[in-house]
Amino acid sequence: MDSNASLKEIGRTLEKASRIIIFPHVNPDGDALGSAAALCFAMRKAGKEAWVLMEEPVPEYLSFMDTEYFTEDLSRARGRYVSVCVDCGEEKRFPKRAESFRRGETTICIDHHSTSGKCGDLYYIDEDEAATAQIIYELLKEMGIPLDRREAEALYVGICTDTGSFKYSNTTARTHRIAAELFERNIDHNSISVALYQSVDEKRLRLRGRILETMELFSEGRGAVACLTDEALKELSASPDDGEGAVEMLRDIKGVELAAFLKEKEEGVRVSMRAKSRGGVSEIASKFGGGGHAKAAGCTLQMHMEEARAVIIKEMEDYLEKSR
Ligand code: AMP
Ligand code: MN
Ligand code: MN
Image (cartoon, rainbow, N blue to C red; front, side):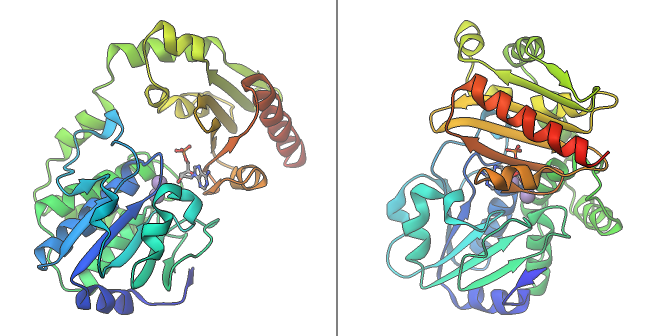
């Protein structure tokens, strides 16, 4: 736990504000978007002008989410407003919006990453929470804002995606209690599951086949790596985002403790890493300027794919050797 403000204080600051701009991290996932959307709906309900400011479109696999107040229009951040970054705690996690964030009369950070840099006048970072959505749930309770189905569904997406549908080691009794309460708000959990896990389109599935062809196991099968090449993307007219979920596929292999998936993006080679039961990957990510959680972390390497792949394999081999 790393905070200089309680949720009560954060709640009071939000209550006083009339305009609130919310900043989820780049390459947004279900927790970043779900936390941002739920906070935004609740603030609107409390009579405020609230927006979720994005710097890229919502990824296709999350396009089923209710994004009514999402915008890429930087001019929404004008006049007086309070900034809240969610599911991240460093400006490099929202680089194109950093200035808009800083311009807020009060800046707030709500996050659960142990590697966060605690930006903001008020920060609340609790790495024991499985998802930022769990902290937003607590904040709204603290503020006395009742949850409607709309907020509840957004929070549920955040919790499902960050806990691997309640499978990962970050899942606690509290996670289940919160989920139970969300169910009581009449969420359509089956539709959310279908949208998240049973709506893979053909192109993505074929792409997974191509990704698997590049798979390599090392350290006696305790490490796995695979990559998405530009060639495969072009051939299937896919986008790098279509590779989402590939790293989980590698982690799920029997005996694999550390997995890495690499894809080429404009800014460099994006590395997604996962650890299964014993080890952690945030140290490796931090070493290369990234971050995340013990069991799920990422970084971007300014290298060619082959070099990046060799570097990550070496790091994972060393880690696995040490933790023998
Ligand atoms: P991903 O592999 O993209 O699903 O990311 C796994 C976890 O690491 C998520 O919680 C991300 O928010 C975090 N993460 C990914 N990339 C970075 C980065 N460059 N810096 C800090 N955290 C990151
Ligand atoms: Mn996230
Ligand atoms: Mn998260």
